[in-house]
Image 1 (tube, rainbow, N blue to C red):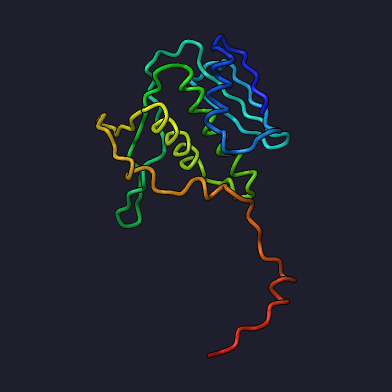
Image 2: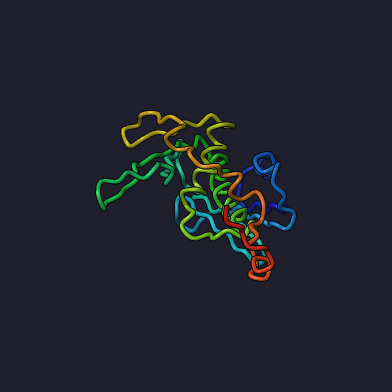
Length: 183
């Protein structure tokens, strides 16, 4: 992974954080650029060809910074559904950059595993928040600033979802199978 830093943040620290967070995933061809945003508090982008991640952080951000997420389990009443509002608080620009990086890294892992990337924002947030919760000890809060138990937001096997490329059964392989015998 190639990491390019165009901010005043310490490049060695950013590299160490990103590489430590993704040490069990391979991403040799991935290029990551950290830069200041043009006005947004933060944003990120994953581009697939060639594989690149852009991390944009606000130059004038004040910390701790509240990061709204989509990690809550959906609630339903009849035909209506909604998600409670959960957030974390980044203590500094390094944690914010790490959150954005991990969110976009999960988009990369979804792409690499040949999964459908449509409607995966909550999974990407969950992947990033899980790491920040486990390794940076950041707490997940609800809209009333009460801590939320991990079981309420970490309910998917995120690693297994992107671990290996999906292989579809081809029609020729399906046709070559002997038919099931009735019992």
